[in-house]
Length: 307
Image (tube, rainbow, N blue to C red):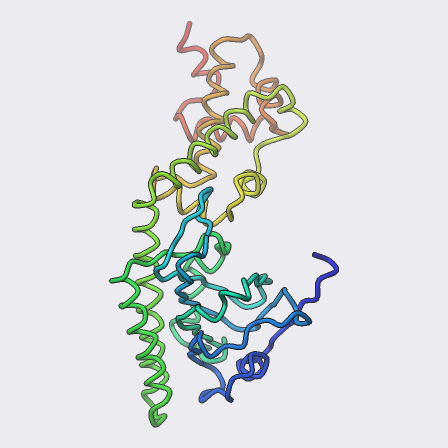
């Protein structure tokens, strides 16, 4: 990875030039038809970083295999992905199949949404931090909705620009993001097999972690480390767990921690400080505070209830 060239593209105009497209009709927002894009050549960079937002809706060839969760799918419907400025992403294209791709790419420069309601809310949409293998899979009906909004955005900036143009385009973008949020929620609920496999792996990792003899040295579980082991992003794991169980990743970690603490309090004569130390806490006060917040009892009061 370190030896691979990274191409930084600062403006939408640079992107159009990089992909050998005509100059953008608007310098700060552009809709690109995927079929018109010049794909990577052998001497071009594999890694890219953009100084603007990119929302891609692509339909891949029928024999393409795409990964969702821990499974591969043969998928011929629309797939959406979201990139925020300064993220580094890789492009891997089967050059024999690239020309068969279709769809749209929406490019939005931060200057276009500056000082608008969208500038304050866009990063609240967690899917801008999802990984490529956590893309949004669209049904045919959902795909038509998204395409309709993208085409409305394009029509608006292609029309005569006036005092209403930016507000109308911003409203379209906000509508698109809200639909994407809805569709992601649907995806978490409907892709049961893949999602429950992730949930089972997550629960096993936590169980193995807290049953480890090396917990004193390892310290408390880290959300990033757990996500890395499952091979999904922190934000995606948290949203998936929240949808399936009503709790975030951190809440699950705390629940497992408290269960292990209860076991030690009920079955051993270790002091609260010793239990806190064995569970990876540097300070017993932090453990006692968390235990009381979760159980509404102090560790000593919980232990006393067994006597």
